[in-house]
Length: 127
Image (cartoon, rainbow, N blue to C red):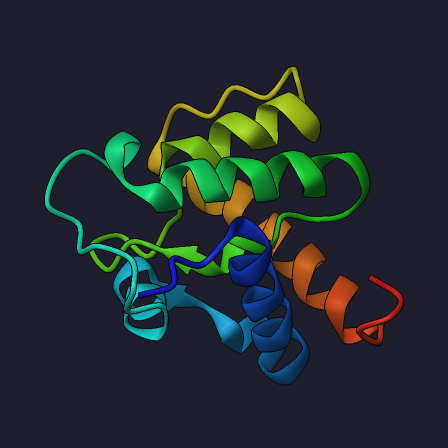
């Protein structure tokens, strides 16, 4: 059993973005199927290894590019989790007030468009 790293997850998300652009959107469950050495979701998100991995990726991305994690969403509402929006405010728009579903949808679509365009225009060595 080899537990993937944040870098493994990040590379996978990049590959999906380069291959599919905005159509690379997947659920958290889809990602866990790909990385089947990670545990299933059985408790709160904060206790799952992906939570820490996504934070590492978002910090990396926040400094220099759109968030790769924008393509991973909940199957219930087709939006990323609360941590995504927290990082968006931290790195993209500190004055943003993301309070409603419309706010979340708007922010997510904006970042999804930006990340798809970013990886569509870059080869693996550019990113």
